[in-house]
Image 1 (cartoon, rainbow, N blue to C red):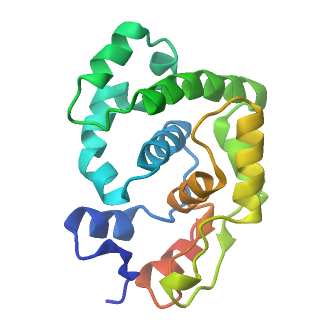
Image 2: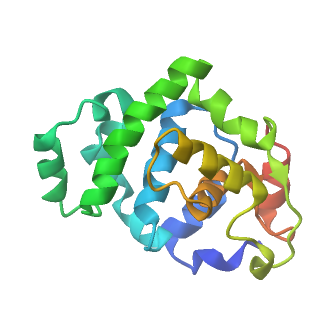
Length: 189
C-alpha cells in the first residue's frame, strides 16, 4: 500500500497518517485540540507532539476550552512541572488565552467550526501534489486565517502553524495523489 512518506515508519506517525491526517474535522473540541497541539509543535517535530498527545489530553482536561479558559497561575505552575508535555511558559499562556478567544468565537458564530471553515469556503481544498516537496508550508488561506486569528488576539497562530492546522483538520487534502488516503479523504465531506 502506497503512502505519503513523511511518517518515517514510526508507528504513531503511521497510525496518525492512516487514520487522522487530512480527515475533515467539524467537532469543536477536536478543532481546539489541533489548534493547541499545532501551537505546541512550533519549533519541534510533530512526532514529539504525537508521543506526548495523551499526556496533553490529560494535562489540558481533554482540550475542554471552557475548563482551560478558567486556568489560574496554579494551573500554569502544574503544567510547567508536567514532564509529560512540552513545558513552555509562552505556549501554555497562549493556550489559556486562546481558549478564552475560542469561546468568544463559538459565541459569535455559533460554533468554532463555522468560523474556521470559512477560510476554505466550507469545504476541503483538494490539492493534487505528486511529491512531498510540492506541499507548501503556507497558503493564501492560511495567511488569511493567521491574520484574522491574530487580529482577534490569538497567539502562536502564524501562517505556517495555521497551514499545519488546516492539514490536520482536513481543510486541505495534502496527501500525495499516489497515497491510498488521497481518494479516501477526497470522498469525505
